[in-house]
Image (cartoon, rainbow, N blue to C red):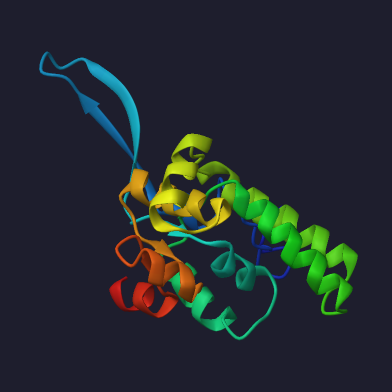
Length: 183
């Protein structure tokens, strides 16, 4: 389509995980070894990666008191990692919101689909044994321990608004406000 013939503007292409903000924050690095032979391309992330809890993910898709702060965090760093359990927890949040009349069933499905598309490429699965050991060490639920184990293994602090979880493992967690102050 020639943009000059059709109003002078093109409709922007919809963003996907491959073309969205996260993709724009990745650059290709073409290196050569000592002999000068190409060793192929490597993708290098040029932005830090956040590890997030479900209570930080949900406001990105359903308006809440935290939505503005979460959007600000996303604008600063759009590469988010989490444990796959987050999508199950998000499903429960969406079911609760639908039952309370905050969102429709169709909107719930759309939110879950978009969240899965955004998070899937960066999911970090921890072993059941690591989650159990972490739960025993920090005296938290096995559900919460999965996120703490991910924080340990990735060497990143989990961004969470769960005050009890932050109190149980302050070295592995940070609040949304702390994450915003440090990015």
